Image (tube, rainbow, N blue to C red; front, side, top):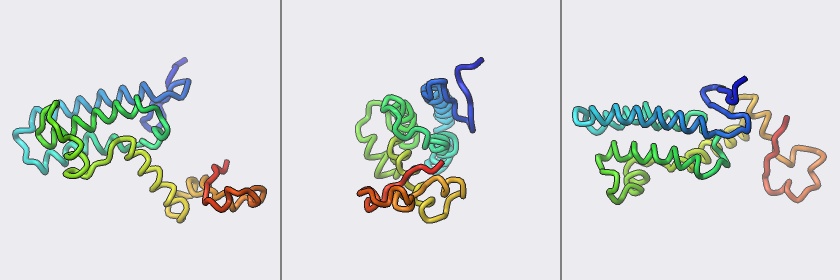
Length: 164
């Protein structure tokens, strides 16, 4: 019997930890960054951005909502990958200053934890406006729509409750 299960490419342990998933995906991302670093001189800046997006940042965003409310130590591992991708795209060295400036202002990338919360917020917004898949829309129910909770103070705060 395995201690891990893999669902939609996400490895989850028996205690619902994502440590193995993050460790294995980070190893894959760093592999692709090493491969891209080898051919960096042969490519123009736009091509490097395209390859980094295809092999790294796009994959960081895949199923990243499972990382919501995860420990900072988990998202920090993915942030190191994103920082390495930023250095590859910008041509800066590991200890150069201004990495945050390049990441946020020049490349318009969010930090990993912010990417997770942004994606979660967009998904909830789509659910509330019936633009998401129906099974997700059915899961996001405003507290004010539940008759047994309409007298609560939280009904006027536009809170959501999961509906099973």
